[in-house]
Length: 131
Image (cartoon, rainbow, N blue to C red; front, side, top):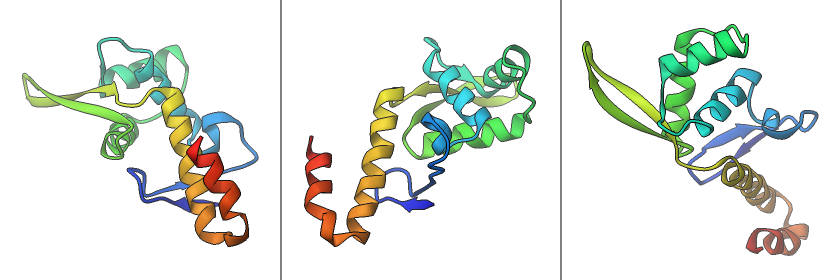
């Protein structure tokens, strides 16, 4: 199921058979998000890539990590701060939303989408969102 929202995240694919953040992200994406959420100083893409490939034994390309983290920053989930380095510049990623705020955002996005499609349950869904 693809849900289109009007917030920072334009769309998300929801797999109702999976649990937690795996409903909307792959294994490596959830691990990358949790790695950034657990960092106090922010992380470079290289840091996230090394942690996933070495500590978590997930084999993923560095380009995939770069693209995913930038996508999460573009959508307002993470904050990317550009900093100078020897070859020019690089980005350090920090949480912009906590894990619980992000989960709440996903739920609200799905409910708002359902409100557009199911007029007969609109009042119930509005009550859920307002709480």
